[in-house]
Length: 359
Length: 268
Image (cartoon, rainbow over all chains, first blue to last red):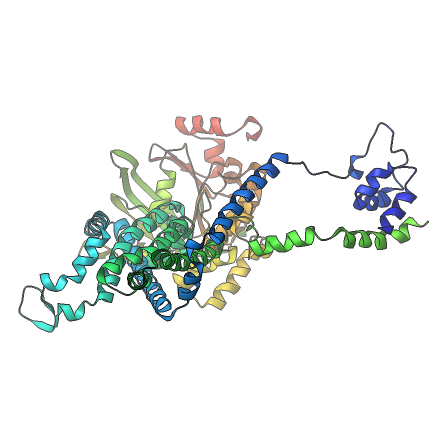
């Protein structure tokens, strides 16, 4: 590094040579302040010229080595043990039947998730309303659907045709009828699955959303009321966006739970991912590799959702934090720029300091 | 402040008649009567728990009264008279009435997830149905008026307390209200930030909008008030010009309250 050597030479008389060699940046700072510092060894030391040495964390390195060794051991066993049958996993991973099952899982998740949270939002508003009827209906809904097993709910919806042969649209308690359907033709496996998952999800998300709404400062609602902002707008524009910060982490927990929870509809012989996998391994007897196929797909979906969660949470923290923390991408970029090879810094230093250093 | 320097207005007269209000078994307002003329600046002082804030909140119907009526320019707040009965108004009508009454809170209550500008335009657009472009132009005017033109895109948490309260004042003014209510607007502020907020209110006092201000800033009250009202225990104890109330209080309770809040250096 010729520039570093050069600066060291110009300052050989004033600074210990070792310091200048270790840190070329120091040389730059010295240069600029050189005219002022007449006697560096006098009692009044100007610390502004000193380089900062970061604290060392030896135990962190020990921990890193142990964890890395453990991770390597797990990875090695996954790769080297032939009983995992990775070949079978690879063969089935993108098979058409698996992808079709995956599509059904996603469809169930998206439909039940969005309907469930929409209904949950309405239930939460009902629960918080001043009408005792609304609030008790909402409470009862959550009570029933949270106290019965989802499995039972699904089977009940699917067998609704046994309880009620026909479903009639008309005026209650009269013989006026607009339309009448056979229950069995109305409730397919898909309908029963969506109905069961949605209503169950609504009961849980109602409580999550209610909790979020309660976390918003009462003064916000008061200010919106005093400004004459209509009730619905107050809920959706003022309260809900601020409640989101409290709602989102738990809501994503629920949605990720729902992705895997959809596997329970295998009891209805509905061909989502998990049921498809079961059908295949019952035929081929390759149970573990097929379960791995399903598992890896669940991991993929969950990972995508986790990334979405990060950015959605970030979006809703606008205004709640003075400055938003950097995204992983921004962190990476700043890491690269601050840890750039010293060579570039040194050459910059040289080009900046050389003219000044000469006289 | 002499009325001569003010712009003359004919709107924003508030009349409070025999108002009672209780929370549970505690009666916080006892038979309160009050008239505020259009364009008048009324300052309400009194110890905490004297019902000052509750009285303010009844004026824009944030609190319902148990007995009595409140009217703004002759129109009853929250009720209308039909066949000799007081009918409760529908929510949409009450919301419309509230747009005539601006309110500034002790804790600012700015919407934390909205920028200063968004805070100001929300009500004009969604409570009054004003076009967005008009509302934005007006909001920028108001931000300039409170000295915060450069903070339009700042979120409340990025602003100091004094700046937040000035945005809150701009937000209240955006509805072009007949009356603006101030509920201890400087109580949550650091001492060095109080002045900037009081300056904005003083400026507003000259514009001819009716102002009802609850405050503990006695010096400010003297400067800005046309009339001062002293409340204690949910009753109006004494009222008069600043000189009468602050300089020569007749009631013992007023005297004792003032002796506690006015520092010796402040005496007239």
